Length: 213
Image (cartoon, rainbow, N blue to C red):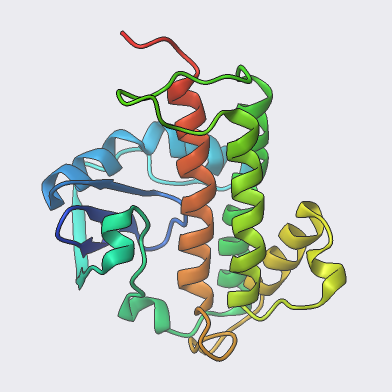
């Protein structure tokens, strides 16, 4: 049984594996979101391999711990609601494991981008960023995400690598489950949101690197 939280918006539903940051997919319905989560496990396994961690080999059954009321952020296309489970304390060893999973997402994106064409296939309406713009977008978002977990020192935000090192270090610390900074995110939610964003765009690059069939 894989424990998940489900975030239900009016247009979009996200399903997120509680203990596996980045394993999070969306669809129009809860059933569709869980089916997508199951379908993406082989792709998420590549991240687990990079992190050197064993993980689920099959997701035949999900245990929905919470159903969260979504917001405009949900419908826009991001998991934007913190679960009660993400306000639980986290030990140093569990935090290091979670931070390691987040950190494994970055080289996964790097490898995907390195093997992708600069110009990606467009969507039905011609939209979508090309490869380099996606990478820059992810890096820019992490500047904002870092501040949501209390990272504000200029040197920690000077480069994408510095920002990512600071994020991983902060997420690798034990926490009592409260927000890491006033009006910020808890460590567990931050790991889920940051890892999801990296992998969602990595998967996008993969999917848009091949001609439409």
